[in-house]
Length: 254
Image (cartoon, rainbow, N blue to C red; front, side):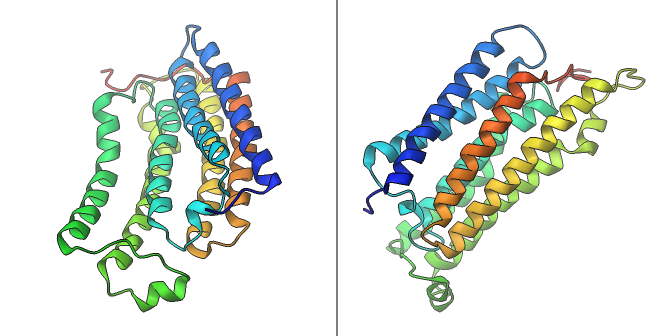
């Protein structure tokens, strides 16, 4: 394992305190009645997951670049998929109040579980082991091997979930959920502003992570984590200060 540097340790613990603090603030505010209760709880869950990752790395004393020390690392690809999926819960609930149910969450996870299951199944049946790649040149050299080229599928899975978020939380999605003749557009504008801010944040964080997966430079993961802490802090404070707005209707409402 690569030992963590002092800046990385500071980022670990500062990030953990920020994530857990913002999650606690959002959860306390979600105890009040109102249309913003469920979105705030979803965002609090996302922040708890990110905070747990920082605590885990901090306790291990492992460098923040360790999970992605090899290009298109399988653990980093799987972890990236999981965190992107979890991070989708807030905008989906904000755009479509009442969206989060056990069935819909299972449907959201299904593509990732199928793709991952196929990968593990084929590896097990073929007796292959996960190969670490030293560079992108190694990826091209061994591209004919299943456990190498299939990483491209795992990589594209992250992109798929990002596209899914923008397709289901954009202006068209919100307009489709409005009741005919709704006379109060102001709450929708507020909701749309929150979605745009969160979408921009997720786009920046995801692009930084996708670059890290490809090139695995020493400082790329550090920049990704630092950017995540900063932008999620902004999103959390904005969500805590501004109401999510009254929804036009709830998912499943006739």
